[in-house]
Length: 112
Image (tube, rainbow, N blue to C red; front, side, top):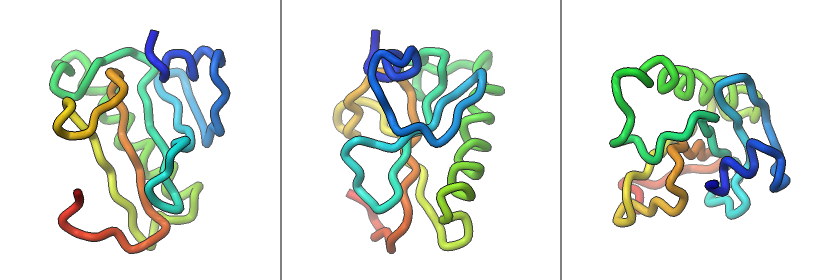
């Protein structure tokens, strides 16, 4: 069971922004920006490269949830960044697809 599955099952506490039947959004425990939340599907997909056509609707819901989270967290209009890591070279540490939503400060480009 991944760390995120344990959060979804409430075995590990998290500061939850919102959730529905398909996903959960919660604050990252090691934030890289003033606003840093994770958007996590409840269905386990190990990483974005493992998602298939059958998960297209769920992937769309994750992206739409990012807008809702940005609005609730007060950064919809100032701007935010979405990050999906795939594999160790990209910094993936939990083998459960998730989107990082970062904002609340000027974000440099290029990242990394």
